[in-house]
Length: 458
Image (cartoon, rainbow, N blue to C red; front, side, top):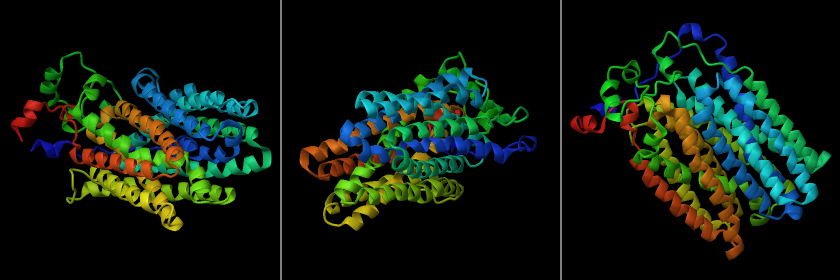
């Protein structure tokens, strides 16, 4: 059946391309670690709420994530096509992280709008660097794309742990304004320091060069599908490049979008409101809340992000896959776990602090794992050659979830006096995402298989 040939193993790197391989991988990881800032910024919440309002940080973090996504889309649809290398992409956009300095002025002037502008510009500066590094990492580990995503996301998680600790220390010693400035310098150093060493492997003698060379056809879709069976990219499972409209109009992208939206939304709500959740809902002191913010980030990295890609790749190699692949099976498993945790959390939050803490940690781990799988599934469902564009587009789902869930949580808490209504609603939405996961399949057209050909051989 053609269905079994959707995702054959990708070829490894040619021997001559393996020079400095691990240096390139490390450089990618250093760049990705800067993305951890979006999960550590909630450390500022208890210190700026008095001057800027309780909702300021949550909405500012949501804007950062939203513009981070726009930066990723800008990279996937424009920079990757017209800039000569990932290094050039990063050097062009990384200076935007210095906009974080505006946040120190926002605190002094008590101007919430200025902090939101600051975070939005910072997010747009982080996005292209993050996507450049993730795609670069997958090129250097072509046989283990899920593991590549997992390694990169794990460094993002470690970055969030280190930056959360750094923010707390800087606030205590130097104040809020200085902390924002130190954080901006740190982000710029990570992006440029790692970005200078990014270099795509030389694949000129391998059929995998199709991944690097745009072969967008001016022919209509039916002609491209008919001719694709003779191309090396099709034979090796690398796929053929689709137009953005073809991707966006497919049912598979719609299902993927919904499952991505529901997979990370509750996690974004937790991370954006983590300090407040510990401080007010679970009645921890500021010191205890800060410590637990760091611990949750660390656990989410070690238990959620780091092993997910390895397990998904190993599961892909086995014959016991529930829904076609290890990545899709794990995506469904994480959605199901999240739904159950949210349903239980709705009834125990005010009754059992310790169980609530365990559930928060589990939800954070699910969030980390889903982020890894979204990157891997962008490659698996729509063929490797479309991974950059698809990943940029699918991050609109994570951006939408970062705007809706983190703001819905405090809003419903203010209306009802507890998190019950939000948690039940989030559980229902997560259940809908699990149903979409069941229906996920690779897009036939991305692998050069026309719908009529697929039906004739099914």
